[in-house]
Amino acid sequence: MKTIKVAAIISEYNPFHNGHKYHVERTRAIGATHVVAVMSGNFVQRCEPALIDKRHRAKMALMSGIDLVIELPLPWATASAERFAKGAVQIINAMPAVEILSFGSESGDVERLKNAAEILLDETVEEEILNALDSGISYPAARERAIAKIAGAKVASVLKTPNDILGIEYIKALITTDSKLTPMPIERRGAAHDGKSYEKGFMSASEIRRAILSAENSDRDPKDILTEKLSEYLPEASIEILSDGIKKGEAPCSFSRFETAVLYALRRLSAEDYLSFPDVSEGLHNRIYAAVNSSASLSEIYSRAKTKRYTLSRIRRIVLSAFLGIERDIALNEPPYIRVLGLNERGREILREIRKTAAKPIIMRAADIKKCDDFSKRVFSLEAASTDIYALAKPVKGACGSEYTDNVVLL
Image 1 (cartoon, helix red, strand yellow):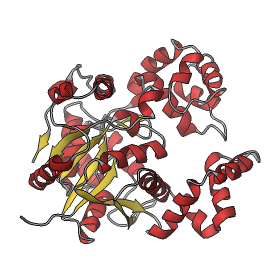
Image 2 (image 1 turned 90 degrees about the vertical axis):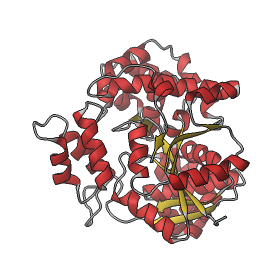
Image 3 (image 1 turned 45 degrees about the vertical axis):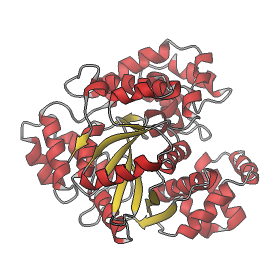
């Protein structure tokens, strides 16, 4: 039997672009024969619906270099960077056939990332962060200042850039779960995470999303528009899948399509109800409740609730959790299963290896959940309900039940 070396990439692929393709290619270049993606489902960490649903995004990935796509379930896909990273790592840990965790990094310096991760896991650093917060700066700035004080500016510099920040969270998760995975940063190429400047062949994901949104209401063929604007930045498969989705009214999905429903859901909650959601601390629940009841839009709620201590991203997570019913006890647990979204022939080889030693049940079809424990059923039920809500974010609203009828993507 041939020897395989499996690497995992934690991802959203919203959508899959040339930066992602480069990451996969570099992962293979360092020795991986097979690549698994643990990918967010229909909602992403920005706390909004993905541009196109998870199976279409899985197909993009499989057509552009990924071999097996595993879903990161909703409570972890929409969580803070720390819980997002830890949930994904816990899934990968449950697949002992995977040896490498490959992730994008602005610095490409694994030792600096490890150093920062170890410092952040030291309980004494929290006191330094609290002291910095008392000076009135934001939490991210306070964390950077605390690291600089303890380890110097060079180590703290990795807290300035988004991929390095997430890389630190991955390494923290490897440490706290006693993982056997080898962390492998791949130096990032191309545009800044949310920037407008880009080098040849690479554009930021936010700019790509804006270009895709511009194709929705045009009289021109979506494929012509996407080819004209994005052929240099997206693999051909991504353009084909996205343009077909736009034609069919399946993309681009937008949070604005159910904003009224979100406001309705929030207005039904008491201040104490918010305490059942992750990221809500004592006192913040009253602040959010007051913001909800004095606002006529989500942007007003965000503006009234956020402070330097309570970041906008945290408020957005709380709002989405309240809307979708993501409760604290679920979010603070770990993903209970390995759910396959798609695979190719090499993916089948990985799956055969995973089945031998998997530490969590493998879900190929919705019916497989019947054999799982109550917590797994609860998480899957939440996933299914959120998919039904996601269908309302499409240009042409979809019906319920697709979580139980859609099949694994096979290439």
